[in-house]
Image 1: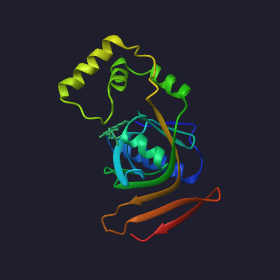
Image 2: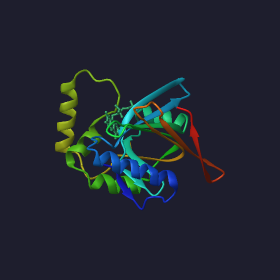
Image 3: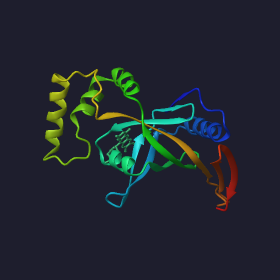
Image 4: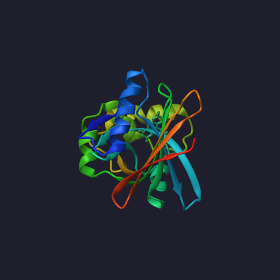
Length: 198
Ligand SMILES: Cc1cc2nc3c(=O)[nH]c(=O)nc-3n(C[C@H](O)[C@H](O)[C@H](O)COP(=O)(O)O)c2cc1C
């Protein structure tokens, strides 16, 4: 589930919340899974991965990850991302474009402090996306971290990312194929609404 805090009252945010509620009511699982695409210009690669969106706080979308991971290098190299959501239960796709940045150390520490010790042991012990000889080594590293680390202290290589979309496209599928595509684009601080052909 996504936690909404003091949601921004502008149209695309209200529209997103309306669609989210419809998806949850329709029994949609995994509503918090969003795909983040990034571009790493140092290696000329585009990549995508799912993350769990934890909060939409006012106008900021927040998820957590490893600050030494490939996605983190991508975000440093190029701070623009493309975000994708699809909720099959209501046949709605949401596309977003945004700039991304890290959340503060204080925010990360507060969040980490309140997580389960298992989640924290994994965050501490995993060199995310680095190669390892076997899966059993992953389990050993995790167990060692569970026994020996301070599991309330957020490591400097783990924390949140925040992005504020400047572009939303809501795609609503219809059996007739007369799919509805509605765009909200922020231009000079003002949301401009338009429709796209299906
Ligand atoms: C549904 C789903 C949710 C995920 N949530 C997260 C997440 O919140 N944070 C994270 O770092 N990885 C998450 N992952 C794993 C990422 O997709 C990815 O494997 C990992 O972050 C490494 O990505 P990178 O090599 O591009 O940095 C999730 C995977 C799935 C399938």
